[in-house]
Amino acid sequence: MRSWLGFNSTLAAAVLLPGAAWSLVAPRAWSVGQTVRTTSGLLHGQAAEGAPQVSEYLGIPYAKPPVGSLRFQPPQKYCSRKEFNATRFVSAALPLRAGAGG
Image (cartoon, rainbow, N blue to C red; front, side, top):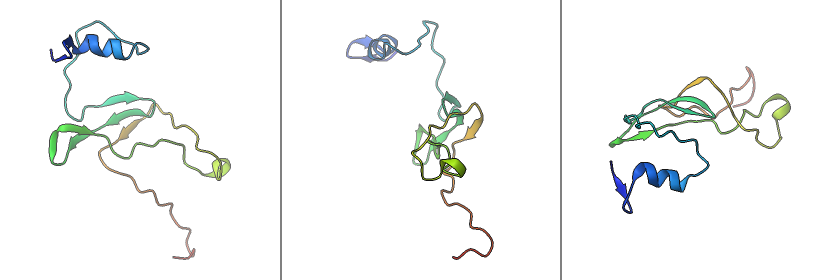
């Protein structure tokens, strides 16, 4: 186990994040790009280009789309239990209606 300032990493994390839910069961091995559970759902990541030892999670929504009653309103927190492919950025452009300028 790695040490940080003389403490093992599990102890250091527990001291630094006392409000987090921790289990004292042996930690599972981490794999680059592994699927992680967040308030945005299950995120599937990948190894970062040029840094294969780094996980990257791209295009994660931070707010509900501003459509309908949410248009011109403050952002609303995005929460989901669905799986999300976070291996690429998604287009931020809204589709234009047929015949609309552009």
